[in-house]
Every structure is written in structure tokens, then in C-alpha cells.
Picture 1 (cartoon, one colour):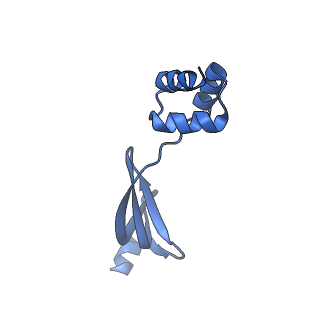
Picture 2: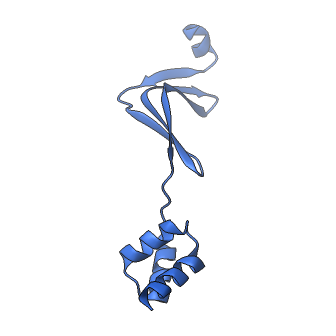
Picture 3: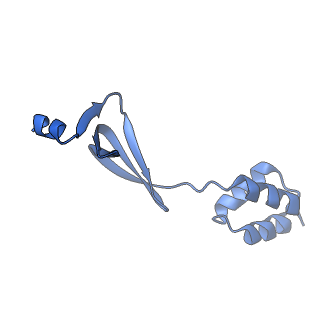
Length: 105
């Protein structure tokens, strides 16, 4: 099988030292621990085959730097307050601004 794969121009090798593989989706992350990863190269394409123990975890929202700066300018709140509020509002800028302004009023 390996000889046939080489004749077709296909190469594969196991990647050493992989501890876990994380696949980020819009709303969650798939974490594959004790992962064995094989890299397959064929026709200029690279494909990774992953085997291991899969777990799901919610993806934590991280606000964009531009959004943090904008809300800080609009409200005068500290960076920490703005980041916390943006996380609480799921990144809704208007809701974060209103919430922060009402806290300081």
C-alpha cells in the first residue's frame, strides 16, 4: 500500500509531539486530546487525519480591538470594564455603550 501511494505521488507521515487539536467553530470548539495526526500530501494538497478523544467546549467571545477603543471613547470606561461588558453583551456595541453609560450615571 505504501509503495502504491509513493508511485502515485502521495506522501504521508505522522506528526510527532501533538498534544491536542482544536477546531474552532462559530459557537464552540472541538478539542481532540491524545491526538494522533497524520499529514498526507498529494497533488500539492495537504490533508490532516486526526484521531483522538473529542470534547466540546463553548467558545469564549473576544471583542475586536477597534470595538473596545470605540466603546472606551464613547463611555470613558476603563478597558477592563469595556471588555467585560462587550463579553456580556455578545459584542453588541450599542447595548454595551448604553449599559456602561447607565452604570456611570
